[in-house]
Length: 81
Image (cartoon, rainbow, N blue to C red):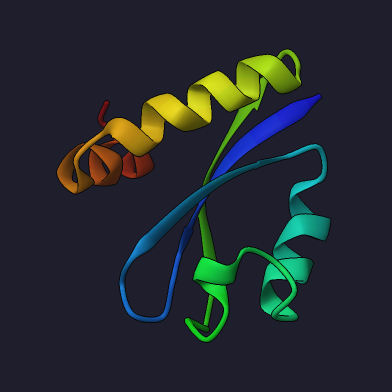
């Protein structure tokens, strides 16, 4: 099982990524060893997860979410999209 996730960073920005273990990946981000983007942007809050069938599907969905404007991402997070 693979997942797409969105983190809300301490500065209010959103970070989207993929993983096969959300809790482990969140711990890596919080330890400062995750994506370069999230380093120094603590605290990090997990605000969205979506299950995907496989790694390829998760990468496609991650790309699609990253193409959305911020307003649409916020709607996705709130469950209204």
